[in-house]
Image 1 (cartoon, one colour):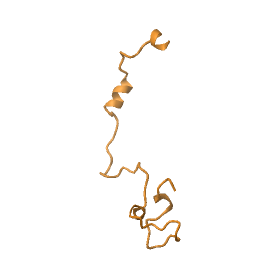
Image 2: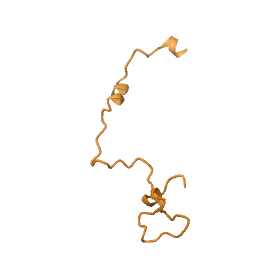
Image 3: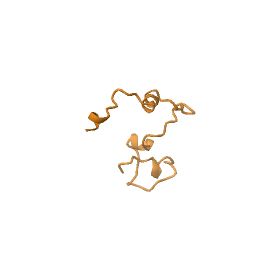
Image 4: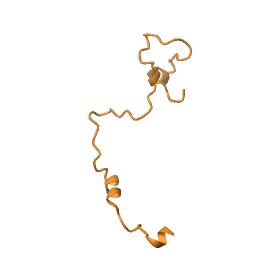
Length: 72
């Protein structure tokens, strides 16, 4: 019913243009600083992480709660 009364398919809104051109998007301050993905322990990737097998030790300083995959 909306299409019959007021079709807007032929109108290009300012918001659509801004999103398509990514207007207002600012570059990251430093290359490689995008931290939006899930963090994973570097030892987990090498199958050398002892999470669940032994307590965390100073020899694995990067094995912290926030560095494990979110599926755990």
